[in-house]
Length: 139
Image (cartoon, rainbow, N blue to C red):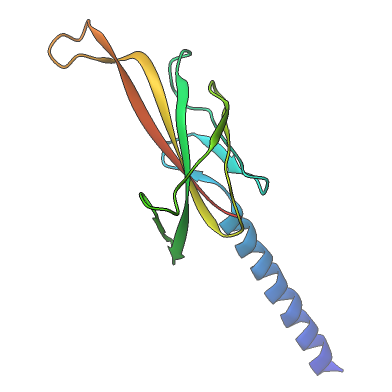
């Protein structure tokens, strides 16, 4: 009887560890501080809470598969595995619909900041520039 109870307790402990690991691996992470993100199973990728000018626009989003080794994510940058996403919302919160399957994914958002970057020689002059934000999530 004691062996069955011990086995049951071990099984419950293992199940809770596995569920914790699954929750941890499925959370979205962005390469910008304080950014909020998600990649849903239907392929909708969302990025928000960025410190950007109100006129910033999402101009491009690409999804690529990743491999995870420990805590290191290695994601495709170019090639046939990188796919274009359809932009659903070009203003914050930025949203794109991406072709997705199960696994580890990264979405790279390319954001235009109109007149958001100062000229290095004359800081009173502002130029259009882009910012890239990458999000990572395991589905």
